[in-house]
Image 1 (tube, rainbow, N blue to C red):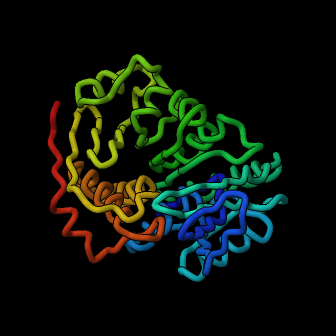
Image 2: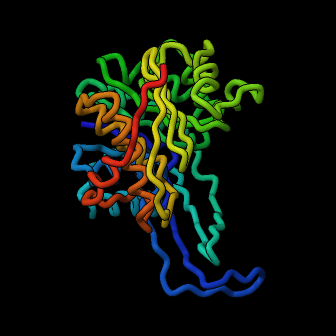
Length: 312
């Protein structure tokens, strides 16, 4: 089983508009509401890949109930910690080829709720082989929360894929318990190491991730958008080239990529197939209107077009 952790989920509301008029009434025919947050996007793609998956995190109020009902309708298993405050809402206004977002800060997690979550993680770690952690931290959770989670999740041998940024990522990779895989982009590497580091080639990527901060992390994958990816696996370095596609909705493609990595790692696939599976799922998400969704019927077609080259 794969457990997905979303520390700050949301109800995502998508509102399509022919045009957006500031300071006037804007009417829409129908708003699309889904259980949102990076970890829940990962969850849906894993479910579509026919993997046994359990979603967890913190939910509260009517929006929290909506998330649980939405997952239940999709036959996705979940075990959330209930919280006193309400889960947040995230609004995306889709207009004239643009996307304007209005994001609520979200609830504050109190100490009791945090401790309940750590107890749940300790129990799940006894029987779970792989965890994914995605996204930002809810208010009230300390910046070292992911660093606190890692030894709990790993003590029985589980692997942890971490997709975060900023201080929470830096603290997580600075601790003694390391994530199995991280997927920063160029800007996130600069935030971690400073602006002196560029990652516009495999050589510069190699120089960046060989810094002490990244030591002992088995997998580091640099997302390069439409240009593919670079990857460090143990002491080897790879370049991943992907096909050019006409993206419909690239939002959530990074989460779909994480789901692909998790699925292939859980199956003990080869390094090449893990990289190709992750990138395939990211591309397939970009070809769908719905965030965190792939058409599994197109999997082999995209998978066969991805090229993985070992450089060092």
